[in-house]
Image 1 (tube, rainbow, N blue to C red):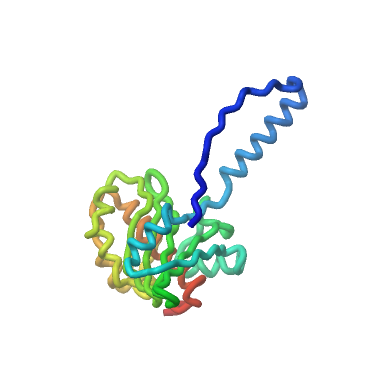
Image 2: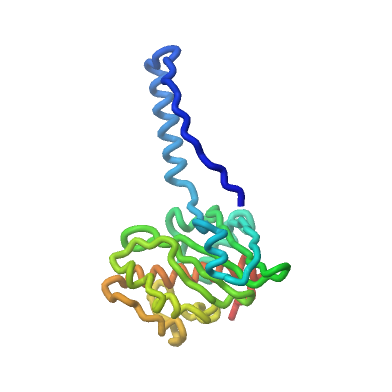
Length: 231
């Protein structure tokens, strides 16, 4: 990874060639407002903060990785969005869930062999956004779970290894029974056995499970060739 060091160069303030008046001020204000609106309504993706470090931590024996950039809009547009929502059991909402959200997916290699994947998604929580990352083997089975970002009163408990370890060994087949709207699985299965570490943080707990299911669906769609579709 090439890292370019940023430098701050201080310059003397240049004199305005002429003051802005009337229409000029109005045009500038409108332009700034439109730019701000574009930023506010831009799709929000989810990348690893430090891919070199994080990949090695999640896959200690790996020797490299490939970064893929995908989106629902580019692959299938509204039709694919509806299919993903059907699999999730809920509609996409807000900046974190639009068809043009750019998903960053990591293929992990040991030598020339593909050994797994890493992918993270944004999810709205009680007090802010959550970023839930999954490390998966080649079959889409979870081998690692962690929050890159978590704003919650129960953040310490959610970040405990004991909580994340409950996801290890699960796949989309397990989550397919989990209803993200009701927060229940019918019939009860592996996901039902994941324990909420703080009953007062039920919304963040359910947001986490929703993020995990959404993550697995997207990996299945973009990386696994819909291996779990209909299962």
